Length: 351
Image (cartoon, rainbow, N blue to C red; front, side, top):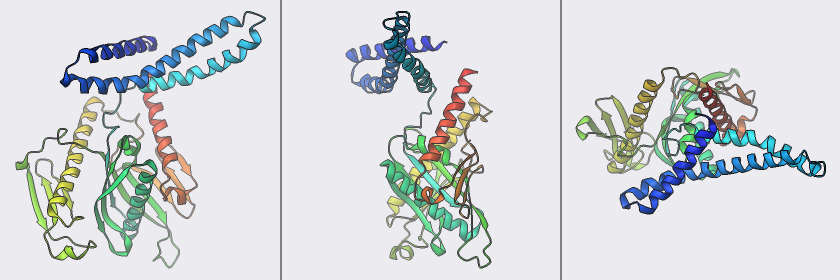
């Protein structure tokens, strides 16, 4: 189907939805209103595009008139040059969207190779994402924070709430490598450590059906930093989803009930993402066109402190401002990853 045909169909569908809303009952209004809210930005962009096309054609016709040529020439070239960008924006809006893009997200960070240094960097990276969330106006709730010695972390989980959080952060999943001289290193040698990052779309109960009989729930006394309650009450909760083998443990709260609720939130997100990954594999066995697969085993980025640089290996982007990135300035990286993914999907659409 050609682009003009796609645009005609889009405008026609918007008209159908508006008409249906006038006669819809209560049960239909919500779904129709949501669809119209998604269509209206595209309708506005299409209207702007077609208005620019019409104005360009009118200006082009005026070029043949010697008296109007000078006046029309600047307008014609300006309109002609603006149309490709408008068309690209429309093509992007027409691409199939990831249904999870608009959702909030669960962030999980764990140290991998590197011992104490990996644990330290995991804590620093977790803090960097927390600062980035603040710049975006998102709510960052620490669900679990298992502190290690020396100020590091054995594992940290956060719920990040806001519109479009997953769309922004989904390419952060993978192995993050750090190269630097640890504070305990007396010979000045650079050590290489790694941490794993997983970003999961938040799931509602309607997204994932979990049978209570499929769960094994254990309670135990929390350990590590966390206040006086850690050795007095069995507040920590470990939930095992028997069919999948997924295990989630929470000990951040003093309340066993609250820890269980947080653990279920993370469990739903993990099971939802596992099903999304399965369906994506069924739809397409070849995912090379994507910026990243989201696989936690994929090394995606290196933070080199001696050289002050951050390199994203998937797109060959290097920024010489590691101090700013660790303060939460991820926008340049996330913007470049998003643009690369959009370009790849547009190219695939044109094949």
